[in-house]
Length: 192
Image (tube, rainbow, N blue to C red; front, top):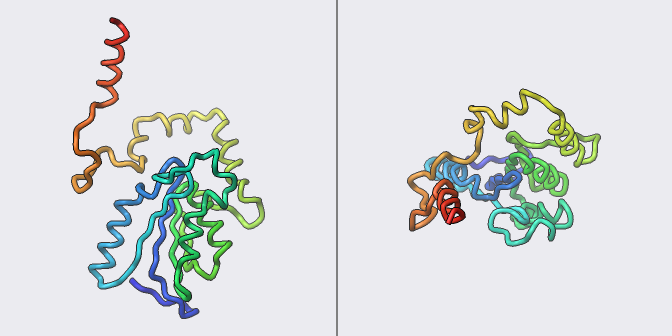
């Protein structure tokens, strides 16, 4: 899977960039699959899914992140740290597309390919915030189809999060109560 580009640079890195309200963890299954495929083919790809600022396990709160460049900082740092002559494939999802676009603009010599997977992708004419403003105005319009999309019976089919934790991933050693039992217990407590 190691690819040489026309410039002679080698692509050994895949950086997966999460969307809004997620973290690098949201790519765990894809990252594991890419690593396995590369190992099986005898290639040494490094797959990285950084937590952007105030996301995942990054301990900053969103109000502490002043600029979009600061929010994208962990991705920019990953590109800065690439050895000379190596490039990365960037894959952005959702808001991660804008981070990928910023990184590609700042480090064109470090990016082999920028892929936008169901992601915001700015154009070359409008300011980067334009796509967010367009999405925001679209979301404010009353639209039956849009309401069905977010509230309909097929919504779960489009969720990025698995309906249950996979067998190979243990999230906790003890079983915790569900929200339903918590609500029931709270209602019972409030009645007494």
